[in-house]
Structures are given as C-alpha cells and as structure tokens.
Image (cartoon, rainbow, N blue to C red; front, side, top):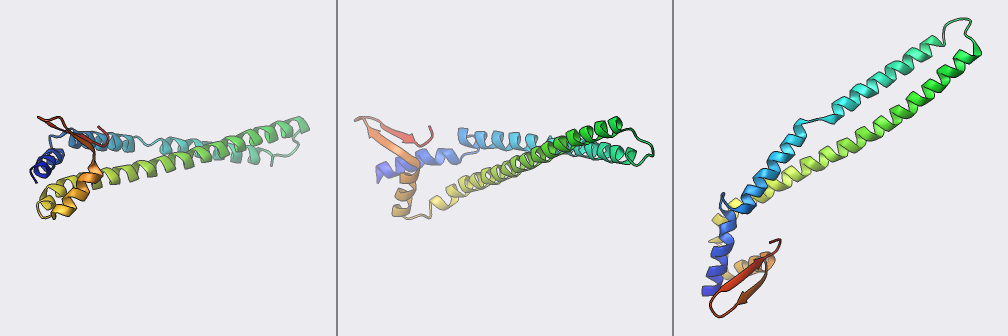
Length: 157
C-alpha cells in the first residue's frame, strides 16, 4: 500500500495547474484559438465571388450583337479557366472547413482532458484500491525499484 500511495501522489502532481501537462494543455488551447481567429475561408469566399462575377460579366458580353468568332472563342477559353479556378477554390474551401472542424474537435478534446485532470484529484480519493490500480496501469508504462528509489515511467514522457 505504501507503493500505491507513492505512485498516487506522483500521479496527482499532474493534476496541479502548475504541472507541465496543464501548462501544455493551456498552450495548445491558446494556439487553437489563435488559429480559429484567422479565417482563410473568408478570403476564399471573396475569391469565389470574384470568379463568379467575372464569369457573369463574360457571359453577359456574349449577349452583345455582332461579335466576332475570335472574341467568342477567347471568352469561352476565359470562362473555362475561371470555371476551373472556381472548382479549385471550392475544393480548397472544403479542405479548410474540414481543418477548421478538426481544430474545433481538438479544442473540445483538450477541454475534456483539462476537466478530467481537474476532477481526477477530487474523485481519486473516492476510488477503491482496485480502481486506483486500474488507473495506474493505464497511465504508468513501468515502475522500477532500485533498492532506494521508485522510478515511475508515465506513458508519453
């Protein structure tokens, strides 16, 4: 039981707001929020609107009487180029939206981890010895006793 207590005390250090893991979680959260403040989708939307406007203007120019075949061909080529650009921009917008959704999911996961860490300290005292040992097995990769010190190796360190 003394070893259990030592391991539990060691693991409880991770629940302190000053612990490296808590500081890392806060830093990750701040970085994700900064990324969310910069929205490249707005720029893509402006470029999509500009492409659509250019295509509309070119189509409207075809309605003019007495257009030469060369001009009509140039307009068709330009409309094709703009349509390809429009498809590329829409694809980029979808990719950026997926990235934004992933970032939002990561932020939610970080919040959940932070909440779990803070509540762990409270509920750890109420856990049975078996529950504590199960938790320790999930968190601790290995422990080594050298005769004087107990070395604890936590996953991810």
